[in-house]
Image 1: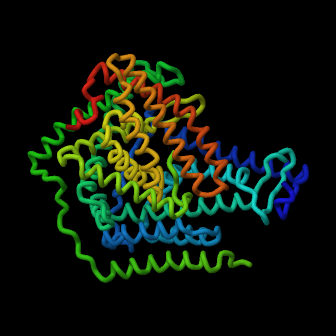
Image 2: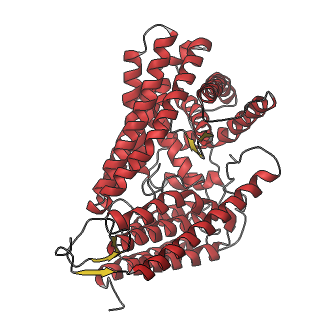
Image 3: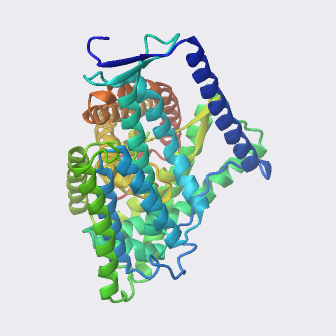
Length: 313
Length: 203
């Protein structure tokens, strides 16, 4: 091991135990916070939280993003997301996070839904941060920490940096989602995706699916409530799996039976393959100026990322 | 488990998108126009089912359902799963928008294979249908886990350890998915067996 790596830092007993204590403290703090959040969520009623966020509840603001034409906005921000995920270095990924926070402040979208998005990706990212430092490949000129008591699992500095870079990139894309999706009515935002080449047929399917998510969510909550008042408590056993299987089966049957009626109702209201979209607001010069500003910022980030990977040295 | 933004290299992201666009395009072309709204509505119910968390020891898991979607929708399952994942990434951030192509391949390909497999092995009795349901549910999730691991491995040698752990973490999900899948299929077989013939339900 040692002759492959140029720099090995061995932590002695004192340093290792200090590190262990700090790690345990941080993890237990997170666990306590998570528990409290969960308890708070369950305290008012016993129904689990399967709520589906309403994206466009605050769509009538007047910010930089609200006044932007949806098609141009969605196209620009999607392109910016792709440019951000192409970053390679931690420094500039951190800069991207900063810029995206500014974008959120500018859009004045609520932080609550944003924190929910961050919680959703936290599991995957936490796995990367915990695992990558211990499992990444050994390359020449790597720095490796040997922690007392864990000599078999050397801690790679490079693995940690790779993991943190991914975390920063993922967080910046998540931050961009709210300005992109929450600053126009959802149907307009979807129309914006048609500018990216999504066919209209697909868009009307997405819109219909989105509409019925809320219907079927009510349906399954209703079924779960009925099961609970009859004494059903979910546990880790075969009976629970079978009963939940029946519950899902019932949900699917209801949805399949519903499709016929929904489709006939749509036809009788004049449905001809896509939903009427209404007149699109005209695109103005300002829309394209905004697009240019965003793309220039993202391209600048990418180019400094490639030209000056480490500005501190 | 869905892949977040920023993990996969650009080439793999782009290739994933290209393949997904092809898959969706083929589905949109071959399906009848009147089937599309129906598939959309059914997709909503699969989406909602995947939000339900089942207890598993101290923690809880949610179902991925590629096997069941394949068994119920057959060749239109890829389209259904792509729409579901698109909405999941828009609404919940389950899987990043830039990784959507890769995620759709990861869930959609097993669904297509499972749909074909289910029709092959389901047999005529309730027991054989339930066993087939358990098998395709388990295999569907297992294939999704394998594709996830393979995609992670393309991100470089550093990710091989992560890929291995991700696969091991899916084993309990595979068991739960197989058991619930058996429950779903045997219930459908008793109550509305015509749903288990793909195409008949949406046609």
